Image (cartoon, rainbow, N blue to C red):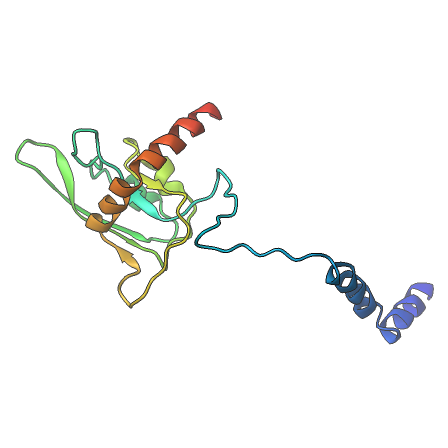
Amino acid sequence: MWQRLKQYVKSFSMWDLLVGMRVTGKYFWKKKFTIQFPEEKTPVSPRFRGIHALRRYPNGEERCIACKLCEAVCPALAITIHAEPRPDGSRRTTLYEIDMFKCIYCGLCEESCPVDSIVLTNMGDFHIRERGDNILTKETLLAIGDKYEKQIAKDRKEDEKYR
């Protein structure tokens, strides 16, 4: 009975609205801060997962051995891989695509890779301009990996400390 009466009084007096207005009033007069984005960067968590990249060995050869584990483990089915054997007997990918609209950035592809080929970089400020740009091809992924290899290697070294 008392609970029902209390609920009626709260709804009649718009208690939730008053609580919300109190929070608004608390922060209304405090000094605001703005980050000037391209010039200033906010701190990024070491666990942040950004855009994907394919890595190369120091001799320039791509690391991916076309085992297709990343394709199999991807819960969103965002990765497509086609492979064929090379003349020397090793397997390499002929097609490696990631649909960024499907990707949920879970990092399972990165964890399943036995040769540390596919990685998620800490670059989170990428955009898609036109339809079709959401599909990252093998060439695009290798270019991203080449561009950020020093940062990726540094992040890998720091990750080893915590494992």
